[in-house]
Length: 96
Image 1 (spheres, helix red, strand yellow):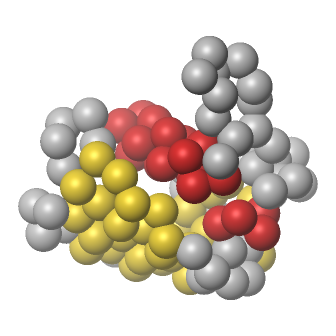
Image 2 (cartoon, one colour; image 1 turned 45 degrees about the horizontal axis):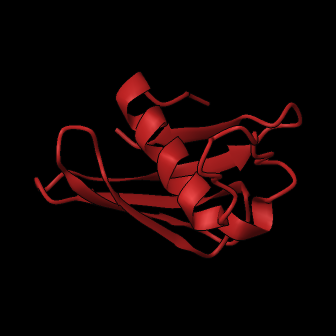
């Protein structure tokens, strides 16, 4: 299982905070991905990366090696699996 590169990780983290509705104005609350798995599974996160790319990330319903699909406005498309580990890390395994 691989972890995302820093730019992707930061972009996904921001999108997932917005998706979960747990982002506070002051940003003082840490969101537990493990506790909020249901907010990701079966949903699509949509956002804009720091470089200006619009993107969509679909998370399959499983969350234990579920399907993940990434598409952006520059034509990048990736498919893989996602899992939330026991220690609360969201990890992706992208197909080559």
